[in-house]
Amino acid sequence: KDEQSTCPGIGNACAGNQCCGGIPATGNLTFPCPTADPEYGLCAVNYAECPGTGNHCRGNQCCPGIAESGNLTFPCPIADPAYSECATNEIPAVLVQVARSPGKKDEQSTC
Image (cartoon, rainbow, N blue to C red; front, side, top):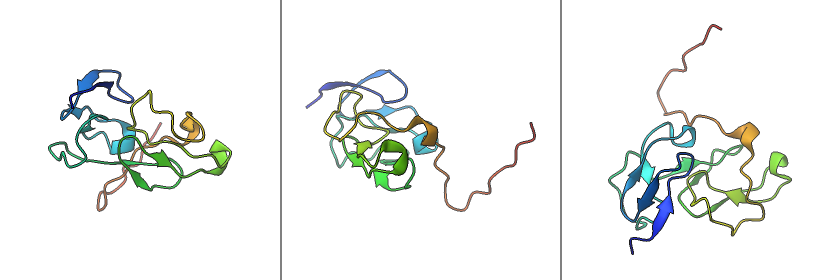
């Protein structure tokens, strides 16, 4: 089942049960390659947060539609870049944000 894929948000090639490097939607923690088995659990997280709702999604799934996507469903941030089963293929860029870990205090930035 080691189908070739690409790590979303990173662009590195991956296949099957491997971890991809972190992206903001996973709190910059490693996550499974889009073609990993559903039960594969050796990465730091096995889900991402859907922009705009915070719903958890994994791999080739659609996030719920939000106003910024015209209320159309869109790919999970860790879906295979070629995944096209949602109502739109565009992830609302304005909403892609860092997933916060529960219990961590937000740090203030002074620019």
